[in-house]
Image (tube, rainbow over all chains, first blue to last red; front, side, top):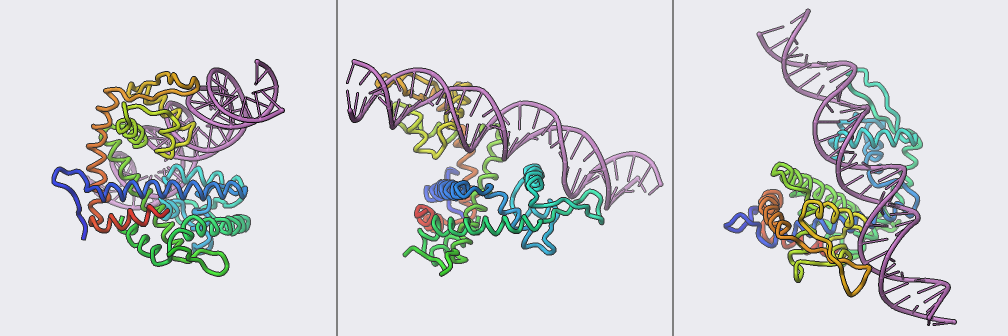
Length: 149
Length: 149
DNA sequence: TAAAGATATATGCACTTGCATCTATATTGA
DNA sequence: TCAATATAGATGCAAGTGCATATATCTTTA
């Protein structure tokens, strides 16, 4: 099922094209979505991901390293993103008693509200830039192929 | 063939999952590839794209706005990327006589050599992180779906 | 149980990016 | 033909990122 390469170690053209396509499609759609966020006066997409993980989580809170694992953010970038979210009052840092090194990151009510507001824009945006171009069946195929990577 | 949405304007779950999958797959694979470049002591991937466009182009040169269109780089980021490439001797800025506002960006011999060196790593990397996970047929399907976006 | 090592998070610094705007040159239209 | 407008590319500044390392705390092991 897998493993498609030419003798010399160079990838088969179809493989390279899939990779280039992946880069370009992601860049295009992401840029379009970020633009929609900006037009709506909303913060960047990265904020959404963190808020959403927190809202989904039990008690509306997670440890930084848990957010890290769920979002693919790097440790230091997440630390600073949390700084910004905290400055805007969307999350709070709280002590984690069971381990003095740890902290809880807790979404505030305002954080929940902002996430909902962001989702309204985000949903329309996904709908326009992805839903408008693929059928549901195609989207399922695409997701399945992407999950292999 | 296209247009999959629920009544309320929210995207169908398959659409959202395709989008999330696109983000994550791209981030993962890109991070893996950049890491390979770094391990090999090579400059970041963005350099490759510009050098490759120049090498492919007639006479090994293009105008900045042409590179911009081919790579999805923003105008100001490209301008500075060219600064860096020029500082390393990989490209040269030359006058464009037909329009005093314009410039030619020309790859140097060293630029060509560096691109080839980068390609050796890049090819192995694509092979490992994409080719190793998809058959050629799957890669073709994936590329076809991505091109719709 | 103290020293060595590991883990969770934060941070200084250099580099990159985004935004807004600048400069220089070209094109248009009165 | 000149003023107004448009286009190509560069750049100052603020914000974000990556790297290396710091700090605090926990775990292991001799």
